[in-house]
Length: 436
Image 1 (cartoon, helix red, strand yellow):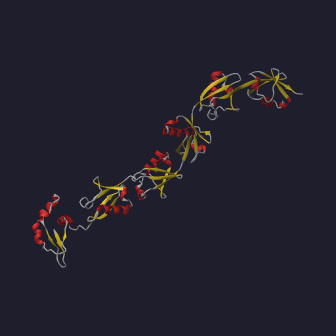
Image 2 (cartoon, one colour):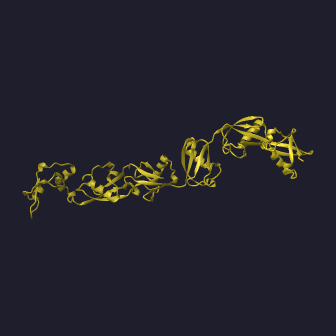
Image 3 (cartoon, helix red, strand yellow):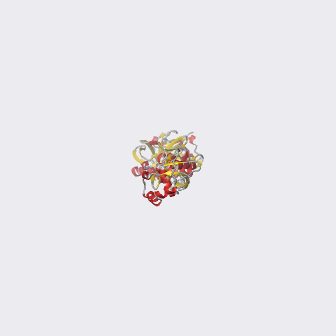
């Protein structure tokens, strides 16, 4: 088939019927309705030196009544991941896919390599005139980005994401991979805080090849476990009790077992609230495992071996001594490294070391004989003689310590020696002698 143009003349087309093949039933039906003989009668055949060959596709368009105006723009739609509809005007006579990609990048800022286009669940690598129709709807699916970089405290953390991921999912990844508590996280991109209910796509992160997100933390406390050289981060709820905080840590880290929490080297009691102990943002708590301790109780005549959990109290030790030695709890005085241990304190708080020795002294009920005038005094056996003299002076101000001496079993008691050294027992007599 050939075509020629001349000034002031109409187009003349010579048709060779034997060259025409029909591609589909629709085209065959159209050619059946418009017969070849009718066209030949209406066209004036003429040839000149400027003949050019008309392709089969051009023949097809001429005979397709739906494409008579094939230069007209048509409108199609692209549905974005967030559900928004983007309209595109394209020319079917040009490369369709390229036009659509250009308009998506111009209107949304998304380069073609960041997404795929689908029509009726079918991936479109190319778009031809036959596949695209007026008012067609294509679906845009964001490809997985390589990474986003999260920066905290001048340190970078890299996570893999999809642009249609919600911000909350990014926070979850930061907690799962790097232990940052979700409740403490604030994420910022180019100065804008990212809200949990929005996607990365909605913040147009797709426009940046290596997006950097800044992480800020608030209401955070650190918990150090020195025995295993590890540190936990936890959300700070100042109205939470120490007991509740421990329970949450055990749920998150089941291998912890039983432990103490310390702040400024002071054991935090379970019933206290965090705000009662001046615990605030970025405070550091120390986690120390509870364990059994073995130690000895030493009296003047007996050594008693004891094994106790370090969270038990000094009072619990005294109950054990009462069971074993029949010494009343209320007469016992336990000393460690020269300091008397208070009943309410836990063994752990007293820093009692493994295989150490505690010294037990009971109250002594002594009878003081002063010129046949006898009066009782209660004192601890490890007290020095000088302290016994002071107690006597407290009972009678006229008895000045510098003007009398004490004797036991005929021996003068020296002021700087403990009563236990002289093996003084309950209800023993101590004699006073005044110096002249």
